[in-house]
Image (cartoon, rainbow, N blue to C red):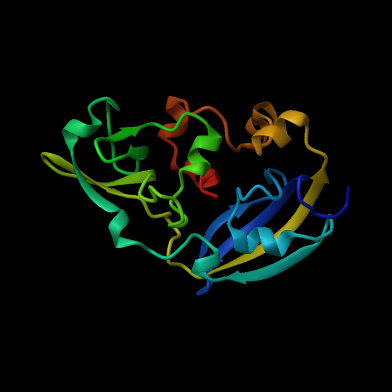
Length: 210
């Protein structure tokens, strides 16, 4: 396989920058980011730009916030009572939680797997419960906690410098789940089960925010 197409497993290296040139993230070719193309597991502007690219190809692409991590939404900043987080246990600044809510209840918990984390990102407002998703603890007060459901790069116009490292045929389980198999992804330094070391390491979370 030499060309990026839907339902193929793609490995990329990239440098992510703000339009000012400030580097936000770097993923080297020695430890590429791996995803299944066509499953909406990366931002739409980047996935569209990768379609049809060849292995070894390098390119730069400017992506506006609307096609990236979304516009910043003030309605995703919430102040919640600490009582609502008692089932989570210990909390700290920068901690990520997954929130579910309906008319009667709102619940916070730790994401357990990669697909739950990605599916929960607040990158659009198309869902009926579009406030559900991943929230970062921004402030801990005496009785309450301020959480932010915006992606860390929300509202930013971005530039990606990208290199296509490999294009492979995914396994059956990868096609079913839409994610690279866990064992392989762990080797690449990507998604895996959330253990205590992962939760305390912000560098690991940067690789999960897609």
